[in-house]
Image (cartoon, rainbow, N blue to C red; front, side, top):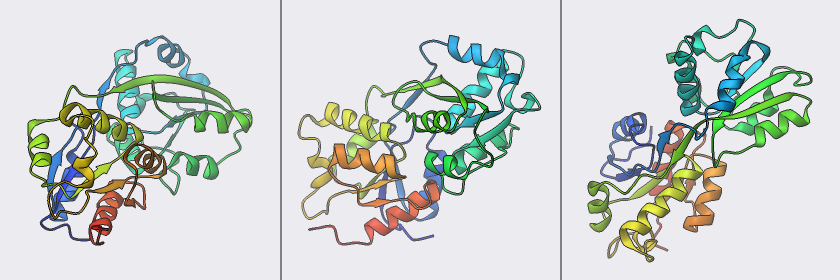
Length: 273
């Protein structure tokens, strides 16, 4: 693992979910500042998910694209007296990403298929069987998620049911420690693990610093280079370019360990322009 010794890294994970990222960055020698940019909440309507869960045995595959989705689905099943670990015997699970697969294992429901690259497009490309005639359940975030999985599987002949299992919103504000670090020009990089964290971070920075908030990223302190903007994957990078004007490095592989490596790579470059 590359060294981040002496660097100060901002992590924009969901509230209460920065543990793995913090541990990996600290192992690389970094000081971590939490900038929570997501809060996970129930969907506005449980009805569609409950209807799907009532006929779970009719599905061939359950396609889960996030750890939040795995947790939300398992929690709802437990309220019904079941769990992912006690799903119908004919139901297989496909997981997008190492973190999702790891969370499923912790829930006692190891994935039957994990694509080689940790993005949705890879799952479609490497799916282990023809999708024709299969019935798929795809739980997802209520707003802001990609529909590429549902669209691609439907185009391949699958019968797809896509339902909201949880929602993610923007926190009320930045923690005081994060505002202090930004005011002092201490941060060397901001890391993002989803397009929503990019959007919400922009909203939070504007609330804290007003319409000139981008200056906190581009000129954090006299003589200090711009903060490195580091993304976990292609869709997150797209949001960074759109909302922040740039992305300095993208993780490969698209997971937390890759994000740490990408951060080290970005900070090894001269970004003073």
